Amino acid sequence: LLPILSKPDPLAIGELEIPRLGLDVVMREGVDDTSLRRAVGHLSSSALPGAPGNFVVLGHRDTFFRPLRGIEPGDTIRVRTAAGSFVYKVDSIQVTDPDWPGAVAQTREPVVTLITCFPFDYIGPAPRRFIVRAKLEP
Image (cartoon, rainbow, N blue to C red; front, side, top):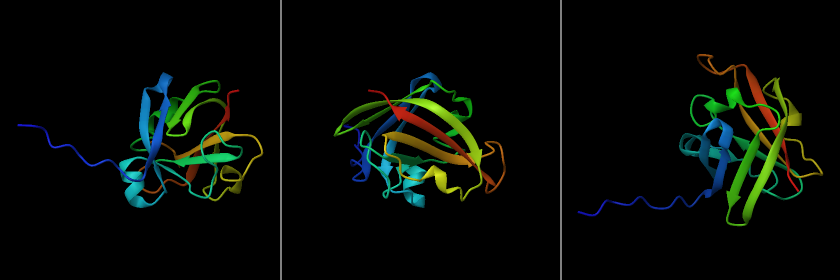
């Protein structure tokens, strides 16, 4: 018997990988509950990968973004989409209040911002946000 193949995800926009952490996950358009259960989500109001501006990706700390607890400045973030492949280098990591506007603020230069809840081992809705910012490599 042939295996039953699942249908392609119409909201999948690409793949995000952080090789040193062994993180490799599908990215979906949108940050609704359904999307964040299946993948990490692209904030639709933010830039697209590789474009000038802030490309914002959200993910749950207890699933896809759990490996972020080990991220370090200088780590490589690879993003692959139908439009191309992009390599970013981590330049800042910070913990903020959940409503800190700097996480999603637009930028002139092409960057990716990864956002998840913090602390990683907190039970229930976490009170802070873990923010990773990386610049596009030329």
